Amino acid sequence: MSAISELTSLKATKARTPEEKAARRRENNRDNKAAYLFLTPWFIGLVVITIGPMLASLYLSFTQYSLLQPPEWIGAQNYLDMLGDARLHHSLQVTLIYVVVGVPLQLAFALAVAIVLDRGMRGLALYRSIFYLPSMLGGSVAIALLWRQMFGTEGLVNQILGLVGIESTRGWVSDPSTALWTIILLHVWTFGSPMVIFLAGLRQIPVMYYEAAAVDGATRWTRFRRITLPLLSPIIFFNLVLQLINAFQSFTQAFVVSGGTGGPADSTLFYSLYLYQKGFGQFQMGYAAAMAWLLVLIVGVLTAVNFLLSKYWVFYDD
Image (cartoon, rainbow, N blue to C red):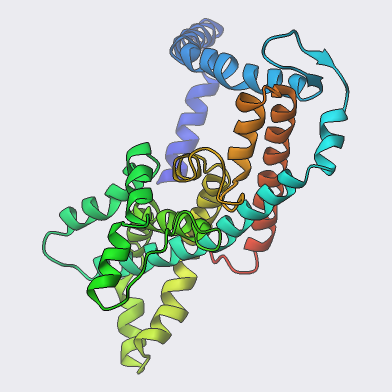
């Protein structure tokens, strides 16, 4: 019946007179003009807020610019200077440790909580909101200050350790060996956003797969490894790419916890924090722009690698 309907519609279209076709075109043009009119604010924002500043930043990366004097063209000198910048190399190392350790731990914790919530419990909406709250507050200055206080010499962490018989006067955020790990722990704590996405993905897995596996005698671990992970792999891949990009841009936590210095001993000198120091601390805005474009290149390459490797582990139904 559908084929007959399509054939009838096609004949009716062919039977239209030139006047009807012209009227139809005028109506389509009016609809297009209305659509472009509503999209105009978005196009203006795209050009003024996104594309324009990006092109300006790209130009400034080839200049010496101090914010106080007009930019002076120096070619690729900023990029060449980055090759010998030891602090830049160290900031890349610190950021990579933060990303490589923090992102998998955060995703693993988010998935574990999502699996627990997916079992169905009373007050699920309340628990979901409570667990999502850290993602909303984790990037704020207030939480970073609270974190700095908690891991201070007389902070809550040392007090809890004292209650269980472990006397500690260590300043966790002032010790180079532990400062970075406190920020990684803060990143893991903001697991709410990927957790909600994981929970939505788990709800889409048909229950009959688990029932069939249970009848065959599969254990919970086998069901998780053979059913949950493969069917959830597109969601895992999405969260991985998203959190990877966000982690490379982390700034507030390191800035507040270290007091803006990246200390102690540059142990929390994130790449974005060093970029800030160069641009707004030392007024080397041209060098900071070059650093920003290097970050874009690094994130772009890692994202492309993730997409290339995804064909080996991401499972799609089709």
